Image (cartoon, rainbow, N blue to C red; front, side, top):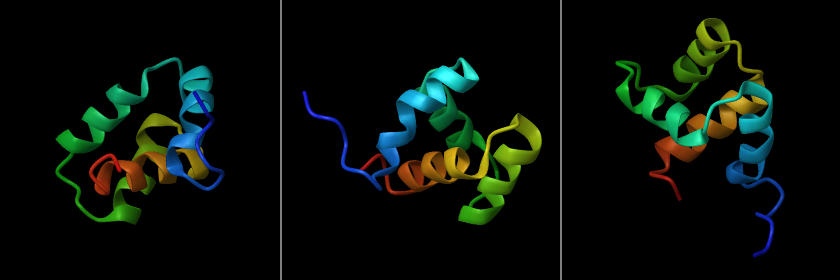
Length: 69
C-alpha cells in the first residue's frame, strides 16, 4: 500500500485520527449531517465547534464535498 500523494486531502487522515482520537468516517458523517453546505462555513464550524485546526478541517471538508474522491 502506498501513501496518498502529498496535497491529497486523505494524506491528512492519519494525523487527524491521531490528534483528535476519532475515525475520519465520524468526521465525514458529522459534515454530511450538518445543515451547512458551503466549504468555508463547514471549515469554520469544525474549527469553532470541534477544535480542529484549519488544515485538518479543510482536508475533511474538501474530501467530503468531493464525494470521498
